[in-house]
Amino acid sequence: MVNFNNEILVVENISKTIDKKIILNGITFSMRQGDILGIVGPNGSGKTTLLTAISGILKIDKGQISIADEIKLGALIDEPIFYDHLTGYENLKLVGKIRNINISKPDILDILEKVNLKNDANKKFKNYSYGMRQRLGIAGAIFNNANLVILDEPTNGVDPMGIRDIREIIQKLNYEGKTFIVTSHNLSEIEIICSHLLILKEGNVIFGGLITDLQKSNNTTNVELGCENMKNLREEILKMPKFIEIIKENEEFIIISVMNDISLAEVNSWCYEHNINLSRLRIFKDDLESKVLDLL
Image (cartoon, rainbow, N blue to C red; front, top):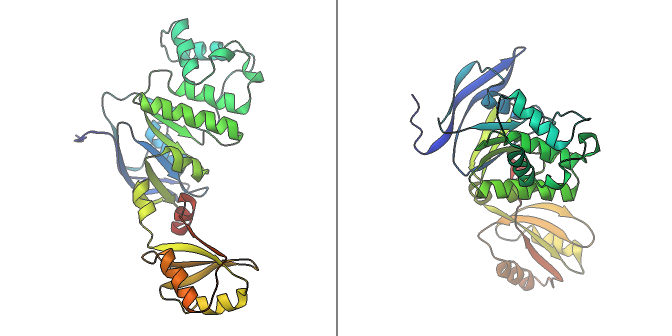
């Protein structure tokens, strides 16, 4: 029996092979209530397979997936499937019937309100925008008052305004106590909404933990410099203490990687001492995308 220790989901050393190909290889992680876990990785890394395994749709070959007794699981995996000729309200009513859940009209409208679709409750699904369809899919995922919600690429193909809407819905529902697992190729969105990150590559976990831990993991900093004599700058900068490499260069500026214990003031001082009058000097904070790509 699993000792949850305040955890609501424990995934222990799970593996899955399909057609002699290892899709998941010893995946281990856990979640606590209120976490928002982002799962990222290249196509074919095992993200959707992992979600279907946690959802109970796919049987694993090895390991154990344990969900605390008080947890209700809801999921939106792949694109939401509803009937085009039915309204948003009618589709959710049908969801209740299929799942044998007795739910009142006010309760269905309340669910639609949570995903900002109450005003479109009587609009047919075929007339919903793609973002609205995704939001109705989220409504279906939380229909049984799920408190662990799995969303597979919820913002894929959605326009910027729709992405913002979905982000705000996730954040609002999380504030109300729901825990989320979200996959996405949009790493900037993952960085905004997620507290934890799991990076998969070829079925293996190459990072698992707090996003802030990943952001602190790099011991380098990127600095952009520019001056009138770019040729001289390029030649001299190679000699600067704590210089690592040139990342990018053109006629107007050069971006270099340096050890992160050197300050901009030190860079400026060194350039001044070497007769380089900088017209451009700024530091880059690595975003999540660059951190993830470094690991992949």
